[in-house]
Amino acid sequence: MEITETTIADVLLLKPTIHRDDRGFFLETYRQEHFCSYGIDVHFVQDNFSQSQKGTIRGLHYQIEQPQDKLIMVMQGRILDVAVDLRQNSDTFGEHTAVELSAENKHQIFIPKGFAHGFAVLSDKANVYYKCSDYYYPQGERGLFWDDSQLGIDWKVNAPIISEKDQNQPTLNEISTDNLF
Image (cartoon, rainbow, N blue to C red):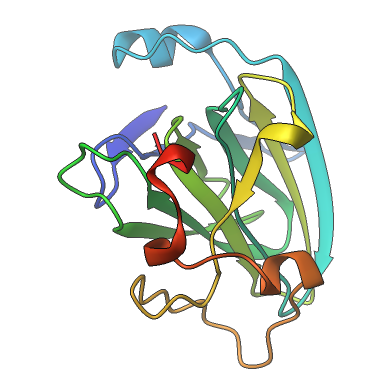
């Protein structure tokens, strides 16, 4: 597995080794020792799966209580996956990184605690699978407005489909420092 940093050092792009033959392919989607060799001690406790249609934007979400490291991959389709740095003392606070994940490229993204996460569906449909290092805790869930001009995210969709909850999230300037890392 090849692990590289994205434009934000702690957000990692993982490119698994794919073994192909006439029957299909095989790859490892997670191996703890790869993370340990990169200095990351993570233990995943919850797996999530979502399906969304083209143009859907989910996010930007994070948990201030029981924050989660996430490992995201696409099982079907193609997405633009986005992480926004919300760590108050970080040199990249308020900046984002975006990578394209697809069933074809089989890449994954590791997003550590302290980041808001979201994605846009670029294909007709996308099945997204992700591992989390802590359990979902609704009382600790927070969000960031997906189209905050300060963030300048190009979601690469023309007619975004957004939930009511995500349409009513605060901008980065409106978030209390109590709701940051």
